[in-house]
Length: 119
Image 1 (tube, one colour):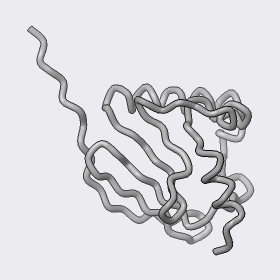
Image 2 (image 1 turned 45 degrees about the vertical axis):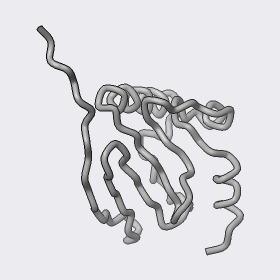
Image 3 (image 1 turned 180 degrees about the horizontal axis):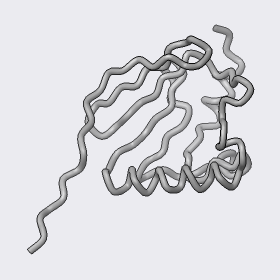
Image 4 (image 1 turned 60 degrees about the vertical axis):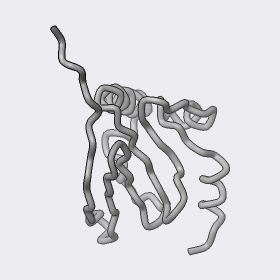
């Protein structure tokens, strides 16, 4: 007899300090974990080992498998705009494939608006 698996529920409200000193907030509300970034600027070396395209795709694919098992979705936001998400229902866009982001679902128009928007 197998027990029915219930989805994981996450409750979190964290503030992380990036190497640049800026705050990144992480919130969890049930099945969605959200990373809210203060801006989109990347600093040299910010990606570390994920700078390698093949490695980045492997890591994101493994992360998606884990999110599928836990029935969780991970979102990346800039202020109030969801720019990308990874989870059981994520569908990678053409931009995701071009950037080597594997299964990460990037929202190109929102990303473009965020890049063009002034602080």
